[in-house]
Amino acid sequence: MSRNRQVQWLALCCCCVSPWLVGWDLVPLMKRPHFLLFGDSITEQSFGPAGWGAALANTYSRKADVLVRGFGGYNTRWALFLLNSLFPPNCPTPPAAATIFFGANDAAILGRTSERQHVPINEYKVNLHKIVQQMKNCSSAMLVVLITPPPVDEHGRKEYARSLYGEKAMELPERTNEITGNYAKQCIDLAKELDLPYVDLWSLMQETEGWQKKFLTDGLHLTEEGNAVVHNEVVRAFSEGGLSTEHMQCDFPHHTHIDWHMPERAFQKK
Image (tube, rainbow, N blue to C red):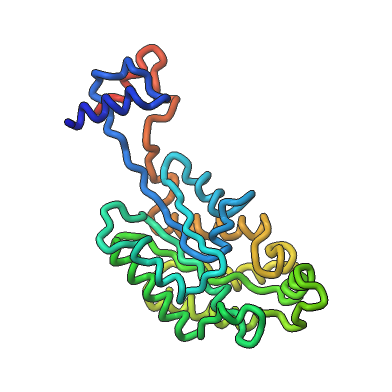
């Protein structure tokens, strides 16, 4: 089927395009770039109410699609098994940008309730590097942004455990803020070594008084305000990396550019 025939067929089939457009030399369908968010449950939940992923999709509405690939409970060791599926080498349609948001589970402490998720800190950094390399093999032009794990409110984690397990809950939290901070430092060090943009969420959140309840629901996952912090920082990183909404085109003409007497003109090739 020729290109013109394909465009005509699409014009007929799409419910939002009238059949009378067939025959016009239409503007080719513009492929929106897409962003891929890769991480654990904090990424998986990012399209929930007031989630940072949903907010990102709204910010880039009509300019880029946002794909969420969050896997609750995953650490960087398990994430490696997903790379060939998510970021195949020399992908014909690679993401324009991607976030890597792991570490909250890697930092789980051995000998406590979430020890199965623990990844030694040196391996964590190596695994992050492997993820970055796979993304760059998928597309050398891909903008990769590293995000540190958020801080941990240890009291909040213990309260959450008691709400689930009652008296059976362990007295010691399965994560601590100090240890998570060490993992955050490894994430930042790697970003600096590779000259990649990063979001130091661990430090940034703790600059706000009362961050424990303001930004975290259960001592680990994000409140509406916490999601807003991530959204704002990712938009900043994307914009500084050349993906500012102000400089990205919409896929089709804005409605104000359509002449209601002769709307077809807005969709003709220039």
